[in-house]
Amino acid sequence: MTPWLARFEPAAEPIAEDASDYELLDAVEMLHRTQAALHLERAGLLAMLWSRARSDSEGDEAVLREVAMISGVSQAAAERMLTTSLVLQHGLAATREQLVDGTLPWSHVEVIAAGAKQVDAADVDRFEAEAIRLVTGAGIGQAKDRVRQLIDRMNPDGMVERHKAARAESDATLEPAANGMAWLHLYIAAVEAVAIRDRLTREAIALHGRAGETRCIGALRADVAIDLLLAALPAASDCDDQDRTRRTRSPLGIVPQVHVTVPVMTLLGESNEPGHLRGYGPIDPETARRLTAQAPSLFRVLVEPGTDTIVQVGREHYEVPIGLRRFLQLRDDRCRFPGCSRNADLCDIDHTTPWAGDGETNANNLACLCRFHHQLKERGWCAEIDDDGVMHWTSPFGRRRTTVPVVRLAA
Image 1 (cartoon, rainbow, N blue to C red):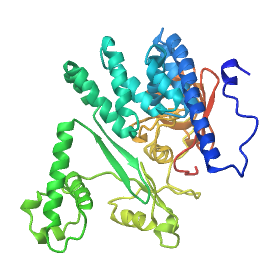
Image 2: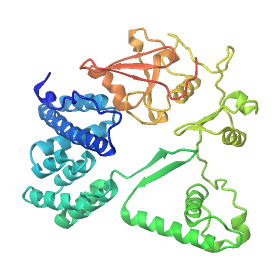
Image 3: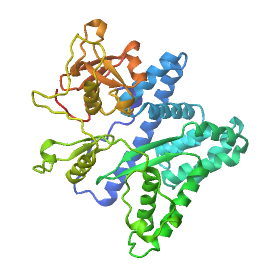
Image 4: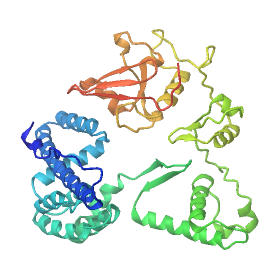
């Protein structure tokens, strides 16, 4: 056994089934400390690997992608893991001790390591001591907020530049939740975020006091946000009770694109098989039928012979016909590289076996890849695709990963 791994070999005697609660809790604590020590060992190995890779940009990217595939995380998360490892190897001794002692979880260590990179080198020790005090016993959300405020107090001169850099990363993201719900996140400047929250709250309070309104402030706040984003309705103060009770939430000038795949038997009311909302996942049959009934037009994808959907062109054409393109975007939903979440509508349609190498323009040789991962095939990555759309990737280091289409649409 590798010497460093031998230190974490599990105990020879398993925990007895009749062990007391105290013994079980002691065992859990021991495993927690072991996990922390393994985190630190991993950090050492990753720092060694990362230091070598950074000698050239190609090696830098290759290592990032390999670590992301091994860990099953996004490339951004892999970069955080690698940079945290570097920081730990070259400093933050007290943080490492707190990690091994089980006082700090790895998530909090990542927060401290990220913060240490944003203060002057001469202030790192003082920052570390105060950060450990602030995050000990705090939840991860509290830990991030406290370290953020600490950085601003210690390095106020850099706040303007940090804000400019962060603002360039502004985005709106979707996080699917259970029961047909989802979280819509806005990563925007704090001033605008507070102003938006204040307006939503004021509108919700105005509605809450009206006759017959039984919903709570939170639900009303969410409804106001929907109205403002999709329908751009006037402010609550400009509408009377009757106007508000007649809200239909139909867009006024903005037509959102919603892609729903509905089994034909569900559409006919003879099955309760769920529909599929693109970018979210399964939705209940009633919602699927309602959305289909409201759709201004339908794009039909059938699996029986005689369909109008084009799934095979062969060697006759290099360009992908619109019908086949839609089929692929519905099938893949996202970029088909492991861990990538880029929407298929924003991706290239890639010939897995190149056209120049006798590849055909067929569904079983095409996949949606974002521009970045499309270009990876020129850097030693190999891809194969099965007839059912399952893709197999082999990295330059020989590691293999498989991705499956989000929606199974047989060709």
